[in-house]
Image (cartoon, rainbow, N blue to C red):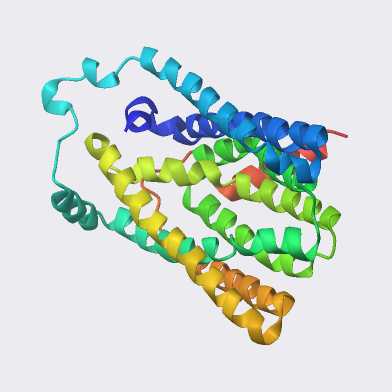
Length: 309
């Protein structure tokens, strides 16, 4: 994996955060044009007739955006042949990765969390559009808020991760993310969703670089691509099943209880599942020593506030 070959261990979170930052910036620009500009031009109804416009633009810009990667020099060319990644069969890769205890635990914990994480995904649009009657413009703003918080706080989270450690920040982001479906249950207007998105996303963003950095920490240097592939495949399957089960469950419940109560039950299940499974990440162990502790960071911040007056 390219990041495994390019990112030094001591600044993995910092460099991972830069990737997230540019992704968020591109996503924000794209959402601004497709979700806000086109909506203002065509309106909520007519905009649907022109859906091919953002689709074609997205495909064209994606094709253009891939071209610069051709100029990136392959790091493996500078590595001796005996130090280059080993090509393995899928079965052998699974067997080796399973023997890596930190990786096995992280995948298992992520697998459970991913199911309840995606459990709420089909339910958020129902709350936004059917219950709160959000317009296309308002939904675009909700999505842009995710990108804005990433741009504002991702670098802070990376600095904390590289100084304090990964596991604490992963647990923090996971348990904060659990509050998202809970707060959606009590939201009664779109402006409340704005506040929820901004606050929760701001806190969750602090832990985003730690997930990527921790995977880089536990993956063998020569087999990063294999480990990331297995992680993404397994968690992707559980993300799929979580959304699928949620959709069928709420469709079934709304027949007897109505859409609002069915939605509340679904979001409640997602909250409880996220909240409980987030504590699993406390069992993970750091793979290296870090220069500071969380207590030291907080003490430094306290001292700065005292001295600043």
